[in-house]
Length: 202
Image 1 (cartoon, rainbow, N blue to C red):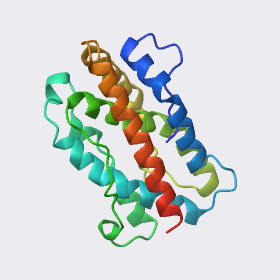
Image 2 (image 1 turned 90 degrees about the vertical axis):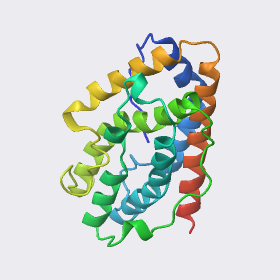
Image 3 (image 1 turned 120 degrees about the horizontal axis):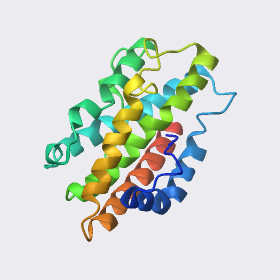
Image 4 (image 1 turned 45 degrees about the horizontal axis):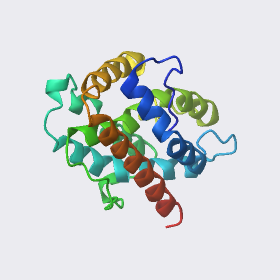
């Protein structure tokens, strides 16, 4: 879930999101330890199984929130569950949809909290470029074989992040929305960490 947002960003809403959630972001990264040079293939697949178990229901919940298109967000184009499903099938999981699914999801009462939640997912896509290089070196997995999720949007990853960042800044510029965005992001980081910890001990 490594994020790789440029530190030089001067966007107010995004800067507030990053600073307010940094501690939970770091706690999640530490818990997952995806850059561990000793990670093995079974552990890697276990992480993907856990990710799929929360991405699938989270993306369903996000899709139920209205207003994305008005903010310039093509939500279906940003969903990652299909990429995770493809990776799992490649790695030998015959029926990913039969895997356990997270039942304790962040509450998304409106678009502002949903933006905060999507910030976590989109930031993971940006940071996934770093992890994808590690995974390819470690296992030989690529975007075409076992690491489609971590390769994000491929060559368009930077462009997709910039579009999202602009939408966050525009929508988060209205009074009151930034606190809701932060709440949504914090709840999503916590949900991810708790779910992945639960799956790791299952």
